[in-house]
Length: 246
Length: 274
Image (cartoon, rainbow over all chains, first blue to last red; front, side):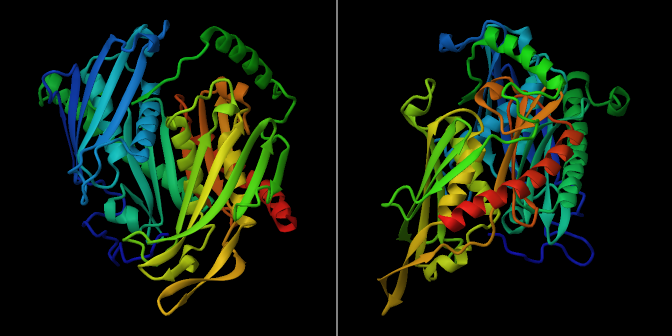
């Protein structure tokens, strides 16, 4: 299925000019939508994603409510214009699966027991898609949940690693995803050191698998710093040194 | 929109406590070892109208897979490859909780994870399923129906799909003067490797393989890993609302590889004789 190309040159530089352990440029903004209880906007390489959080709020339909905790609901959706060929706006099977794994990636960070009989809705809209949109979506959603003031044990930082030209690389872009040998999206609770999302497709030997996992975890930790900076910028202004508050 | 399922919390909490106590003594409700699978029974060629078929029984979980072959146009970006489409459905007769209607997110995840394992392991050499490059290729459909639900649908479904493909007989088609002609002969599917899916769940600090429905109801998190005949990992999916530590994932990789080596000969043996 996957073709070997020349995706890394002799100097160890990738097609978009990055080193093997380098993330694409990431920009995170907090509180971008007026109506939402919490919101964020992320640019992750060429990904442009906006996330809104509504809740904790009353549950509709009512029978979905749980007596001991809040119900987390997630929707990952791609705009029809977000990809090369127009995407049918109806949710695809891929989007339904990503909505599910996104919910399962975010839920371990939330203290849902604090809000019985309520719902928390997370809407992830991919306005422009590049490789790794699920990771960017999870990263932005966790910031939006924090912005909404939902009680959380940790943020959720997400990033992929993979194998390209027989080399383990951080943060696979669109081209590397299509032409590369493996892709492993991961989400991490950075302070608790727990994995909340892990998928993989491609072929990896046992040792490569472990290296890929370590690489993705390092990436998630870098993403976490940017998430904290974005939240600090909104709530405390820019002058506070983020490193001191880790 | 994806949301958590409502469950019978009180019973679930009680049972979870009991199960954790048992697991602390490395025991399971049905007496199995922690990474021991339930008995696997595979029958092939059970549906004569299909190009290949398999009925897999894994404990009380039962699934049936059927292969149907057609011709179609290849994907635009993959003109030199045949099509392989894998689908799964939890039939409404499979449990008291299954309902008719469009597939829900669990059924969609099941189909996509099993498809990923087959596709990414490159079990079928899709390049050998091309009739006219860019125009006509074989389209191999594998459809799975879950007949009885008792946990670990991922592995049961994967074994059924793999067994059905291993025993499938495809019509031998030829191109004559730009037209597709059926020679009336049959050929096996071009097999490159035998992928094996291994699903494990974490309950508290213990990781167990091949969970039953009861164990799945108590799980914190689930992970499915598919390995190929070289012992390489080719597809992974974590599920459930809990987490894994890095050490737990390392343990899971080792178990998936060793259990893959244990289950692969079972599938091979059945499909060679069947």
